[in-house]
Amino acid sequence: MMKLEIKKSAVDLTELAMGVLIVGIVVSIGSIVLLNFRDSRLTSLSTVSVSNDTVLLADDSGSSQVSTAWFQSITSMTNESGGETIAAENYTMTADSFGNGIITMASDSEYNATDVNVNYDYYNQSDTQWALPNSAAIGLGEYGNWFTILVIVGIAAVILALIFLAFGNKGSIGGGGVGGGVSY
Image (cartoon, rainbow, N blue to C red; front, side, top):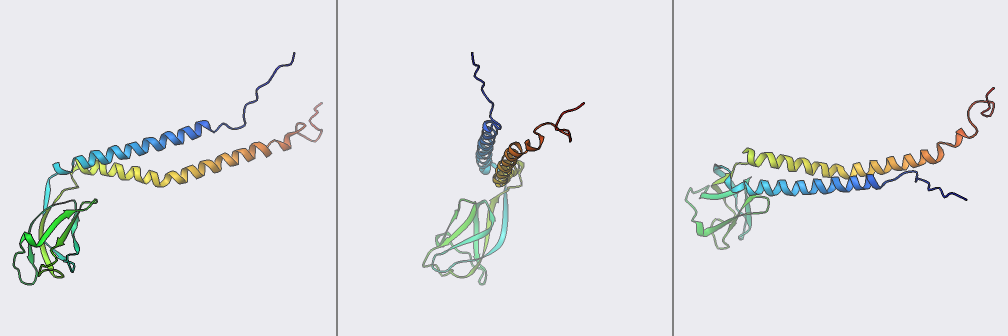
């Protein structure tokens, strides 16, 4: 009776592919969790005040930006040349998705295209409840930048291993030595 022999494949890449997939998923979920944890702490951070930040207002109700991220509120705004306080009806202040404070002037404001001094408060990002998850999320983001390179190097290693497996045994047919593998 003839026995069927099941041959093992030369290289099984299933474990490598699963490992890469699991690492990618863990890094992605970790980044999302860290960013959500960081952002949920934003409004509980202490605030820092900035005095007389000079901002050139845009023409025709365009938007201008204050110099510090994670803006909280404007306390006052004055015209740099005349020193008069600019009433809140002349502008609106919002934060973009990166936390930058954006000043949008009313289209009929006499202060468009002028320099103003802005006094405002912003959230202190050096606080550890913000800085630690932010640094960790940045680190995971850097891993994402290297992920492609690691995958390419892994694929190159597998290809080289297959080449060496295919062509590496050709010189060892018949044993070793000059006598054709026969030893006395």
